[in-house]
Length: 276
Image (cartoon, rainbow, N blue to C red; front, side, top):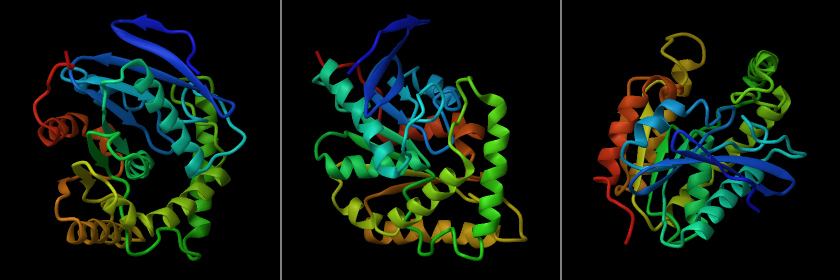
């Protein structure tokens, strides 16, 4: 169900309601429809620079996942729940414009959501662009040995996020909920190769060379090797997938927005106007 629509600076803002949550959506630009899906602990406000760069050439839609940004809190946070948020936004776009088959761009968890959506809805996505996510890594990131460090890191992150409550960048999840979701994502990525086999549209990946940072000490080198090994594993099985690497960590969507926008333009071809 769609809520009230407002327009500011040529950007249309509206909400969709489902599963007891309210999802804020923004749309603006020109050309092909492009939907930008954020990741865990990121919001459409965080993706503002990339969205604005893409709006020069594309009709860009951004939104917040439940418990993020200006979306309402939810009683449950799970991969399937987030996937339902994406599906609801795409269904609303389909209702408003039957001609619109979007390019779907996902960052981090958003990339995993995009892969699952495309694999479950043949013909519903024109192209996929996956930014540092949906990686079939050979080994899980969160092992029993690493669990205490990750728990402490995300508990600290959740405390820091309390200062942003009420803002467009807020994240309402607890540290334990973030940890549980990352464990779930590890399991989902262990089976994601089968999802790629079912996708019927072109796929491009934009990946970071040092997703865990550039340190030569601690677990970062192991995580970075695992990340690259996952992409190499995928491309061996799906050579049609094109891959671009950026010399960056997992925050590449915030630190390298101009480069990412240019890669997206190259990957999905020249912008075209809407169908007549």
